[in-house]
Image (cartoon, rainbow, N blue to C red; front, side):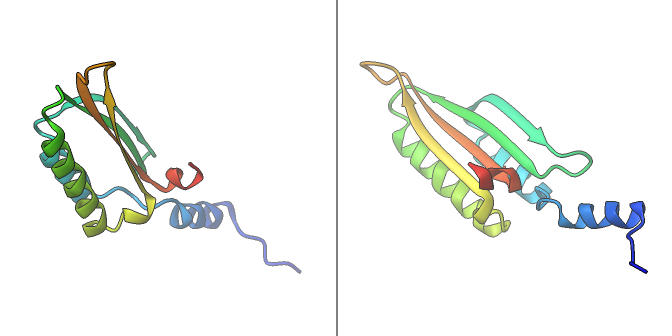
Length: 116
C-alpha cells in the first residue's frame, strides 16, 4: 500500500516550497531609498504572501548620475541585508537621445526572477 498524500498535506508542502517572501524590511528600505525618485510602475506577485516585486523608478535629468549610483549601491546593500541578493535583479539605464533626460532603475526581486 502506498502512502498517498492528502490534499491538505500537499497544499502545506507547496506553501513551504514556495518562493521566499519579500520582507517588510526590504519594502520599507526600498521606499526610503527611492523617496526622491519618481515611481513609474510597480507589480507585486504572490497572494497571500508576496514573493515577487518588480518596480521602475525614474530620476529626471542627466545631472542625477551620482545620486543614481548611490541609490543602486544602497539597493544592493539592502538586498544583501535582507537575504534577497540571490533573487534580485537591478537594472540602470538612461533615457533620451541625444541628450539624457532621465535615468531609470528597475528592481526585480523574488523567486520568479530565477528564470530571467
